[in-house]
Amino acid sequence: MTRSFQESRREDALSVSVAQLAGSDEGPGALVMVPNVVRFIGAVIGISLIGGGALMAGIEVGGLVFAMSPLIAAIIVRVVGGDGLRGVGLNWTGRLGWYWLAIVIFPAAMSVTVGLGLLVDAVELGKDVSFASVGTATLAALVPRIVLAVGEEFGWRGYLTPLLHANRVPPLANHVIVGLTCTIWHVPFILASPTFTNQPLWVFAPLFTLGVMAMAFILGETRLRTRSVWPAVYAHAVGSALCYTLLGEGVFARIDSLWFSPRPEGIVMIIVTGVIAILVFRVPRPATPPPASDQLPPFLSIP
Image (cartoon, rainbow, N blue to C red; front, side):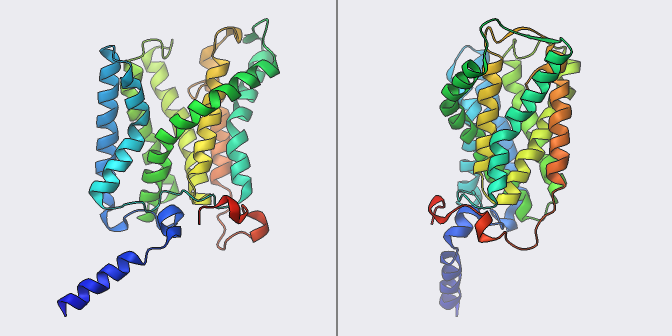
């Protein structure tokens, strides 16, 4: 009887399909939600403290440790907590529209923000700045930014978001938890980077929290709607590459950074991404899968 039961359990474990491993809506370990959520949050904050502390001590590799800490924490908790590869979201699944949205959403938000700044004379471009030069620099920055985006998104949207979703945490609470965790996670790096902001802490902290929260809703929804981590990776990488290009030397001759910075904590940027987050969140959730013609072709999916 005991042997038969054990064999049955092994068969159940082996019956998990590749679809479940790569991108199932069930996500990782529904039965160990609280321990693994606590483990992940504790691990990611702990590793970020190590990376930030190393940066404060002048050890440059601390920046890489910090940037990769969500991925590292996810790997550790998946191994220790028994979730394995469930719910990573490696398949390119879901409606094509979400992938296009992921690519254009942050460039569009930054364009609106900077464009409004130009209209009210709060932003002045450098003499040698052109659309082509910004585009070329952004493309050049894209590869390293994709690597860094994988380091973050495989933790936030590749583990924490689907873990909460698998345990019936409503999308609103899901994104708030992820957004607050991500905000706290940034603190060691911000403290280790004196030039990170020129705003007083009491101004910067709430604005940054709101900006990160808007991004958490946008990126989290792409994860839940597609069951894939890749839209969040693309959006994060493209947005980061363009943002740091715009903030590079010579792009702006003058800018009111409090209002019109293309970073998450710029007031106009918060308003724009906040509106986008609300619109994305309110898109009806289909009860049935989308038609095959509206999905990615099979050759783009991991079998």
